[in-house]
Amino acid sequence: MGFFDLKAICAVCDGEAGLHRYRIANKEWVCPTCYKKAGSSLKKFIAKATADEIREAIAKTSNNSTELDHFKATKKIGTLVEFDDHQKKWLVLSEILGRRNRSIVYRYEDILDFELLDDGESIASGGQGRAPINGGYFSHTGTMAGGLTGKRRTRGVCNSLQIKVTMNDINDPVVYIHFLKNAKSKRDEMVYRSLFEQAQECVSTFQVICDRENNQKPLTETAFSVADEIKKFKELLDDGIITEEEFHKKKLELLR
Image (cartoon, rainbow, N blue to C red):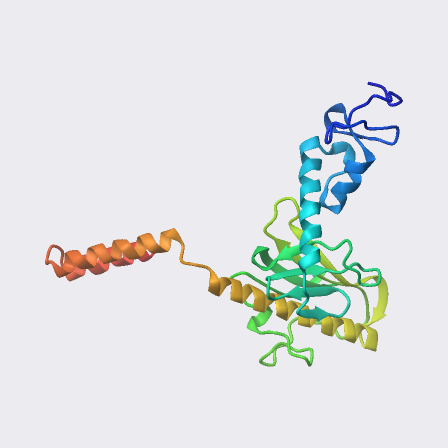
């Protein structure tokens, strides 16, 4: 079917694709309306996306729009990040005027780990089941709680200051929060210090979230099965069927 064929059909909505249509995978077409509805949820170049992937992106964009409507920020960090602690969700604001209109709402439970990058060098990190670098949280003074300082540079010029967040999402596994992007700023000047303090607060907030999520996770089935097995062997010990030495030996094997 040629490009100028007016009867070309959109593989997503089955309507007419029109003259301003887009070619997608499998030699199919998508209409401008469906392409627009997919929005930023479509992570592939349109020419490589399948009709099913575009449908999935449209559904995700629609769901995200609903979540944005219900998002109520309980904590804001500068004009970049907002947290809704009641719904356990967070988002990154648009870098232009700090707007929400194109923001994606993420869930606390999907945060796997994160790191603060200064010109590409990791100077603080944390995540699920981990403590922040050197085992402390950032304080308001710019040091790690407990007097630790991490790897922070204090001199020279910084071109990039960002937080990289790894999410439990195979299609969108990384979220970047840009505090300073492609702009030179001296590290001993007020602009950099202010942005660095915001980044510190954000890192500490993410670690608090991860710690809380870890504490709320139920015991796994494996943990339950091990406990059940130990209980069974304890009953055998109490009944005199096995010796205390045999019980402790089996217990150590199960706990390995």
